[in-house]
Amino acid sequence: MQKHLVIIGTVWPEPNSTAAGSRMLQLITLFQKQNFKITFLCSASKTDFSFDLEKLNIVTDSIELNSESFNNQIALLQPDVVLYDRFMTEEQYGWRVKEVCPNALTIIDTEDLHFLRKAREIAFKQNRELVFEDYISDVFKRELASIYRCDLSLIISEHEMKLLTQTFKVDATLLHYLPFLVDVINTNHPNFSERAHFVSIGNFLHEPNWQTVLQLKKLWKSIKKELPEAELHIYGAYATEKVFQLHNEKEGFLVKGRANSVGEVFSYARVLLAPIPFGAGLKGKLLESMQFGLPNVTSTIGAESMQFENLWNGFITDDEKDFVAKAIELYSDENLWNEFQQNGYAILENKFKTNLFQNEFSNKIDYLLNNLKEHRQQNFLGQVFQHQSLQSTKFMSKWIELKNKN
Figure: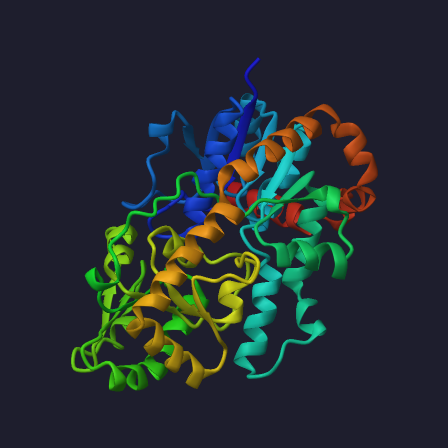
């Protein structure tokens, strides 16, 4: 009998706008390869950029926030597996799923660890090194509670796996490492001399992308001075007025807004600049730069958990002067550029190829579906966090529901 996966999304996937949107489509593909029937539920409105999930034979439906109508919806669907697209979605709906479908396997796709991103942002904005206390925020407590309440959490980066298992002693059986995935590695891209200009990309709903552009504004004049013909093209969905105010034709600092095609932009740019000051997870733009044969200059946080045997498809530096020097060197040296382009292809082949992860993921899901009771008995803390006295989100939701009725 065909198994049924219900995905509960905070937003409808936008693979051309966000790395999270691409990631969701990769997960859908993995489950479809396991012959799952899929339903996608979401309370947000669709936009012009939302992916048409019906094309993939996925049933979609909207859900009402803080409403018992969701209980009826999920009861009718009777899923074997429920996937939450981030921990906040689990907070909102997890207790309802547990009440109505207690035997459904529950999974969170963490996307990246929100508490880690938050801790780094605080340290960055206070202009200091991160200390352990920065981790222990409200976001940390909520995210960890969510991880314990679920049967499995998908972790996108090796650094985050290590942080959870070694620093915070989360049982490894509750976690599964699943990075971004690449099916086909195409090495036939425009060469060095067919490309021109620098590029930066990132959706502006994500604070690290805005901070990255501010860093670039600061560094660009020094690069432009040495390479007067070069321009820097800034792309990103959801750019606001403050982003467009940075546009300056004379400086060659050009804010372009949403890219129609990342492939087109990346195939004809010569170097990607990504001095990412904080963040977590894996950086979609850096994976895509490897896919389109585009070397980059980035920060330690940018390249985190993405190198293979110390190979990188460009330079990694956190020093501003060095960043400028490396950007100029990479833009000007064809032999170096070619070497780094090949490094990118090697990283994709050895670290992100779908076939490296597909079977293991499939086996994990099968194992949990067949041994769910035993798995849950071992997760003592999960049982503690399921206890109703700790479920403030449940009672807040019930209070809102009651208020709405009145």
